[in-house]
Length: 128
Image (cartoon, rainbow, N blue to C red; front, side, top):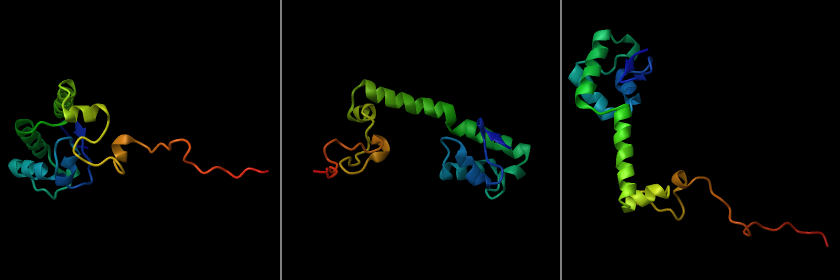
């Protein structure tokens, strides 16, 4: 089990896919890292040598912000938006979509499960 930037990457996946398990590294960044470290992208993570792992780690440390540091930066950006009461900050405070999506019909991911308002359900027929 290889550990890169504090994350245990899956052994049975090719290294270009396994690197995307690190927060802040996507497919494009993964390809850039592997080309800079001179590692074959299709090799399995379990077949990497210690030298290759250390080269990958060095490239990540030199050129990328990943994991905890990146999460702190993102959280700080959101906190700043909330403090200055920008529109995006207000949307974050209200737990609503902040990138212009409609909320009249969709937006369930941010808003949560639908709550039925009382009085709209059909009444059961009563015996007379």
